[in-house]
Amino acid sequence: MSSEVARHLQKKENTRSLAMSGHVGFESLPDQLVSRSIQQGFCFNILCVGETGIGKSTLIDTLFNTNFEDHESSHFYPHVRLKAQTYELQESNVRLKLTIVNTVGFGDQINKEESYQPIVDYIDAQFEAYLQEELKIKRSLFNYHDSRIHVCLYFISPTGHSLKTLDLLTMKSLDSKVNIIPVIAKADAISKTELQKFKIKLMSELVSNGVQIYQFPTDDETIAKVNASMNGHLPFAVVGSMDEVKVGNKMVKARQYPWGIVQVENENHCDFVKLREMLICTNMEDLRDETHTRHYELYRRRKLEEMGLTDTGPENKPLSLQETYEAKRHEFYGERQRKEEEMKQLFVQRVKEKEAVLKEAERELQAKFEHLKRVHQEEKLRLEEKRRLLEEEIIAFSKKKATSEIYQSQPFMTPGGNVRKDKDRKNSSFM
Image 1 (cartoon, rainbow, N blue to C red):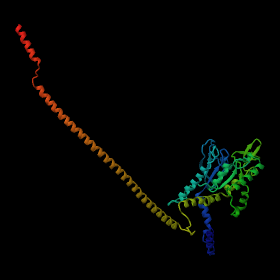
Image 2 (cartoon, rainbow, N blue to C red; image 1 turned 90 degrees about the horizontal axis):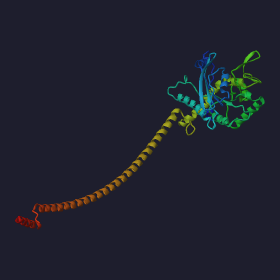
Image 3 (cartoon, helix red, strand yellow; image 1 turned 180 degrees about the vertical axis):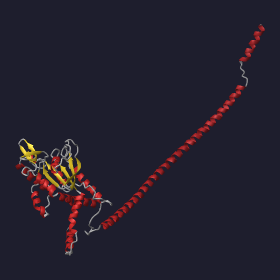
Image 4 (cartoon, one colour; image 1 turned 60 degrees about the vertical axis):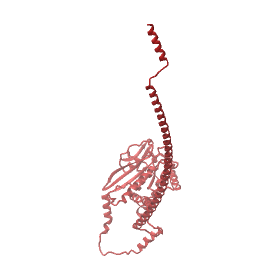
């Protein structure tokens, strides 16, 4: 950083100042810039973080003197979700595209440990969308709807004691990503004495826990005094209301109670006017600029470093984008070559392992084949032996059969045959 400052100072010393001999016309540059800005319009994105029913929507309505469409939220959401609504507002000839992002269900869960994470993810998502638009070859930032959060109004419950753990965790997670302006909601719920002590207690806790809230800038002489004074009033204790009550001869925005009336725009009653002056009338452009030059740049730098892009080389020498690209290109090719070599070695190793497995399988198959061949040969010999024995039995049986047939073809004579003939002869003689 010191080397950059030195180079800047050196350039400034080498710059010559010349007096012009006549009118040129570039004195109209501020008017051109104003005309172009009015033609393009402005955008402003507000993130409202606070518990359900704490008065976020009412305060936004009061700040912009408009009844925005918003429905009452339930206390029974299982997770925190963010709801964004965009409106087109116009005051005189100035157009403002206002986006209000509300945290629905914040602080309603039993386990509040990760309640802030959806908020962080949403802010990062808007930064990422803008970065992707910037990195396009054909980009159109002039017509791009910038959805990056410019300010976070963090609503603190008027307990009168101290910050809740959830509030500290959430603000600590957001302070490097967005401009945080803490406000004490429903400030008419506690007395002035308690409110002042509560403010001191809150600021002490924020400082001791390292929470960086947005400080109104004091580098511009025209607003340095008022901004420095307003920094001492943080956090603002606010009351919001769109109801009008007659006080004296005029109608004022106020909240009416049985014990009296709290006027929203009465600085003796609350800090609403201070918040509106600081947020809208005096520092809106600084909030937009701070978002782009600080918070977005931190995100962009981190993302580009993750991609391997840096501004300086190994010896802290400045590098151009071309040099960075070439260095990254060589690094990529070297990495690719190394991976290719690793893949080749791995492939050869796998092939060798596969060949060994196949050879082992082949050896096992050959052994199994030889075993089966031997068993088959033995079985064949056994069957041939059975066949030979069977053929011998068939031949023997055929011989026996032939002998039997020969015996059956000759006359069969028995000794009893002659006796029968003698008996027949005797019988015939008696007759």
